[in-house]
Length: 294
Image 1 (tube, rainbow, N blue to C red):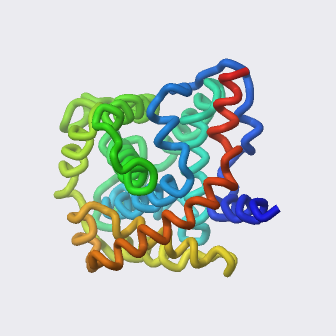
Image 2: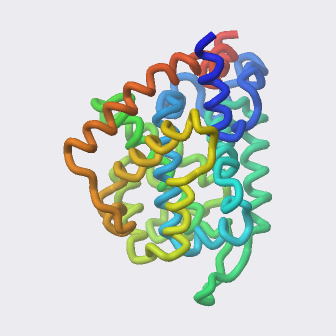
């Protein structure tokens, strides 16, 4: 009985996040893009880690003025940040755990949205959401953030081979979204963690902490929600921002937490993660595994 309110709060935190878990049961035996033996299914299975990673990725994305311009001009995130997080969570869930048809529909939906997102930044530069350089930036911020949070909350001793396998698998997503590797400075999509980190650093000269960036951080830190979940939201956001790479924390103008504060925050989130995991043990990942067992 106590777990039902937790499940409801999770749905509120992600604004629904798309189809209910039961939609991931069919068709039986359909592995989708990755399948049950993939590292993607392991890394993306933990809700607390994915929340920390998703918030961290959003903060990193806000540092790229052209990536942020597309969201600023063409979405309602300023009025509905939770909805934005929910739509991202839905895409990750459907492409990670959905059937082949569900994953293809999610990819097609995002490609169609990207094709309409065109504009001009206030400084005069033009942008397009399907620009390979911007697609790759979003991909790198998400995959590095998800893996960092997975190590923090789930598996601190994650073998390097498993981390590299995760990046190799996830390289499929930007390719399927239309990211041509030949259009990138690296001329390839990262397939190891070292390549992903190097490519992420390759964007440093393009990043800035603008007024728009600070507005996004403010939204994250005061994201509206029911009072019962406000404390949990704040903890997710604090941990996500404090666990960003050192260069990003500095660029955002944040003061890194002291060792004791960081230890306390991590400990509190690890403690709160346990009932969340218990409440969601029969969630999307479990239903996808049931689909494969059937």
